[in-house]
Image 1 (spheres, rainbow, N blue to C red):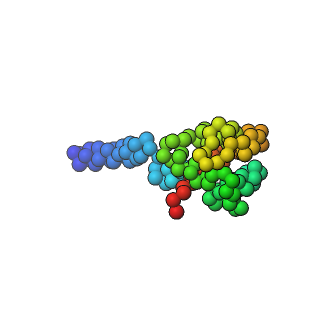
Image 2: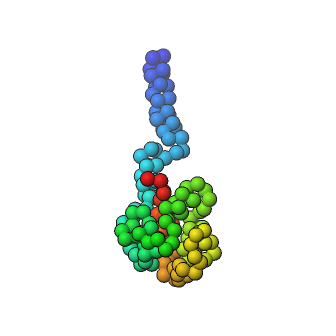
Image 3: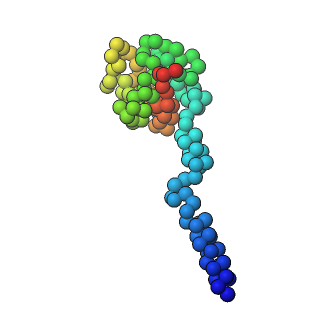
Length: 139
């Protein structure tokens, strides 16, 4: 009888361990990887958006076909500023829709169109900002 009680207690403890220990409220590694890859924006997802505004005619944008301009700054710097905590995605969006608010040293004011707030939806601006935030000037 004692063996049977110990066996049942052991089984209950094992079952509770399986249910309760799991991930400790955190997502499983596979779910975390899936979530982070879902947050990654590919060049293919934004190519048409950068083409729509002709961004690559003035800016170099890593991964974007034809984006080899030199009139404006290389936008890989945007990614580094976001990654270093110097800028947020909201800052990046603001720089797109109000480009004369902050001018990169060495580049003239008044060159970038101020109509991108009308040209792009908020969702498109967010997608573009997320893409730019991933870039790095380091090769």
